Image (tube, rainbow, N blue to C red):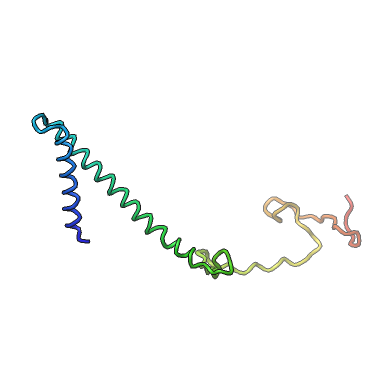
Length: 135
């Protein structure tokens, strides 16, 4: 439909609504306030009708593909089965872990190993088979 035809149609409806309102008042008693009220009411009615039509059109565009997808679902299952999506990570690749510390007979005191100000000392082993220092 051509947009100019729609614009002329809306303008015609507005003029008819204004004329109907002014006719109900009576032609000899018309004031400027009556004309302003008639024009405002006509444009408000047209704008609300256009807003409802636009909302319906946008709702149809938004939800029609979803409804079509649900109607075309396979008959053997109640939901759609899709392939998993491959996702590339934005994080850099993980580097290899550092080599493990050689096993020795001394153990560090503290949770994070030896550091400045910490003394290394021999702690009793967890197993009785290995000799250790009794406290």
